Amino acid sequence: MILESALLDVLPGREEAFLAAFSQARPLIAGQRGFRRLELRRCLDEGRGSRFLLQVEWETLSDHTEGFRRSPEYQRWRALLHQYYEPFPEVEHYGEPLLTA
Image (cartoon, rainbow, N blue to C red; front, side):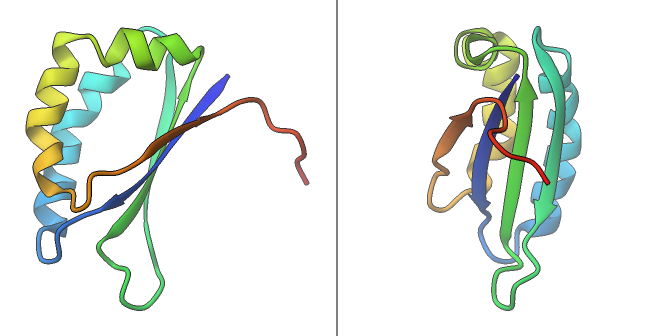
């Protein structure tokens, strides 16, 4: 299992529009080969209400980087969501947990 992680800094004042667009975009990723689940969380720290944490579980790294990112659905995902980010998020991928408690 691979965990994709991205901090999404949404333009202030556009948070509700972003969430509405994300609701439309979610089925585009959920239908992809290797998709397992996702979580979107809003930052609770003062002054950070425009920051969201997106974590997506994939079966393999290539399911995300080659499968989803090269799909027609990704082009629609981009059109729906990328207009809300400033700066553009850095996406990182993590392997299996090394330690859990």
